[in-house]
Image 1 (tube, one colour):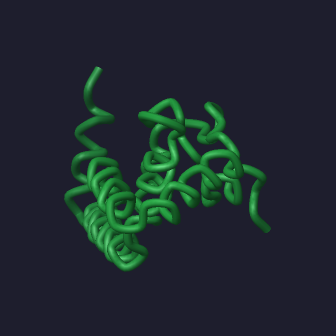
Image 2 (cartoon, rainbow, N blue to C red):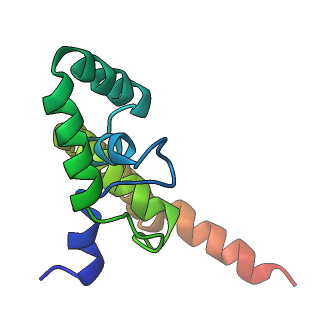
Length: 130
């Protein structure tokens, strides 16, 4: 079951706080994990090629999309997580798999130390200290 904040983090919002006009390009960049400058350049190119259609699409999105709430994410790490997931699910999966491998290796080292004679010797020395 998803928590209330999870579905909101994946919605498409306009972001006027980080935008220039209505925040549509900033919202698109945030949703897809793209560079906002690239999205703005693509919007200008689309406006030059498809004058009325691009302008109409921008205005419709500007008026129809909800504004991104300031309290969308509980903490910065939460926002960074959702941004990385939107950027590339494959990269996110690879990062998580790598982190689990690192944690597994640390756990193996800890288990090896705790079950070794060295651990018992270190504990005996600590018990001797005043």
